[in-house]
Length: 310
Image (cartoon, rainbow, N blue to C red; front, side, top):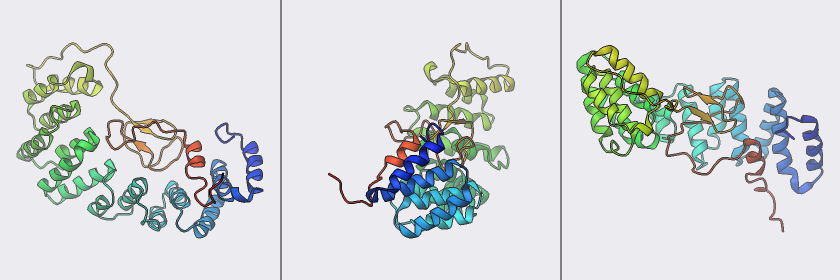
């Protein structure tokens, strides 16, 4: 009923659930969902506070309450709520806690110690060390996390954030070359990242060589755009024949509503779910296809507080 946006029908089923003693827990979760679906955030907040007290070890209610505060951009309160379930071993919860630490102004390395599953956290840690002129520490962060994500934004941050001069660019290029060496033959993203790093260091020929190593079937609009930029920098570089069916650049995708974004967002602008954007090339994503969120949250461990049923 909620998937059909039929609130009236959903409320009828909720009344049935509330009349079944053994369905008390799932009825409470459904009550939260309906209230949120209606946009009654203040009411949902009060309901969630009550349920958090009733189920102090239930991460679902705490995550929803934290997400609600996040939608209101009350980062401090959102962080306080979710840290109450810091005992949780759930990677998703740890990831949420880490991202909220960034938004509340905590030092990025502290957030990274909690979870290394957020590209946002990794990028902020890289910036943190570059702000301190500790380029080696920053490159170490890239090295430890690159093969989990293959996200060009990580390398872009390292090679272009607060560049001091050309010698600084060359130093960063040498460091990133060593970092990407292990995955260079395995991933076209590594070749593209090195091509971009060379471009930032004004090494036009080196950049072209790395682009040419990318198999045609892996070309996307990012390769085309970098080639176009190179051709403007050097008259010796000519744009090759671009396939007519060249792929678009990879986009961030919301695991709930499948909305696409060019940049990472903490809150999906379409469905307002929190911390649900995934990078398609990340190795940390589940291989199994995710089900619709409304079904997921209703069916995932709905009887965890109930006796086993025959």
